[in-house]
Length: 232
Image 1 (cartoon, rainbow, N blue to C red):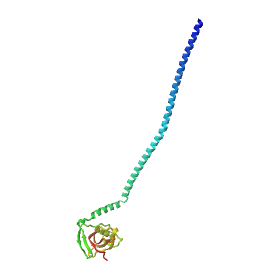
Image 2: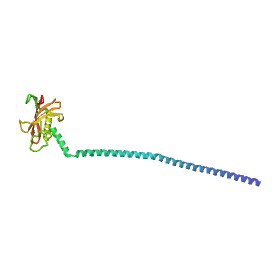
Image 3: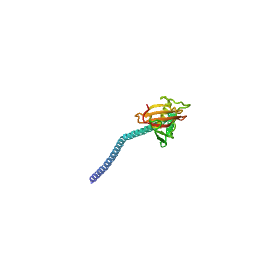
């Protein structure tokens, strides 16, 4: 009977050890599985972050390059605009005297403009070759760059000659680029006066123009005669 008890006791102990071993092995497997799971997640997560960083870095650098190019282009455009403004200012201020002279000339031309409504037109004139005579009390001297005592100079290269042509253009409206001067000389009927005979280059417009000198103000037209023919 004692043998049966001992055998039962040993069988019970072996069963307990097997049960204990089974529990321990199960726990060990569970722990190993957890360790593997955690390690896997850490490894995969780390690779994803690295890949994400590698993918985003070129895009970030590209954006930086594009932004830099935009900034450079904007700066370049602003510099060009500033340079253009500076250039225009420099051109305007290079020769103040010329600017003043131009402004004075423009103002003078505006003042010299005659009022055509005031002109007096009559048929005929000083000879049978005159078709009609035009006079205008609003005519004014055309201005002059000459100073001191004036003596008419009938030399085509002189300042006086050019100023006489200016007065003729002013009275007739005939452009000097389309003008042929047939005669320009002294008006012997009065002092400090001249007479010019001119026409358009096609000879469709023909004039005899009377001008007189006004001290300090230049030549002023006094009468225009429209001619039938150019005098020979």
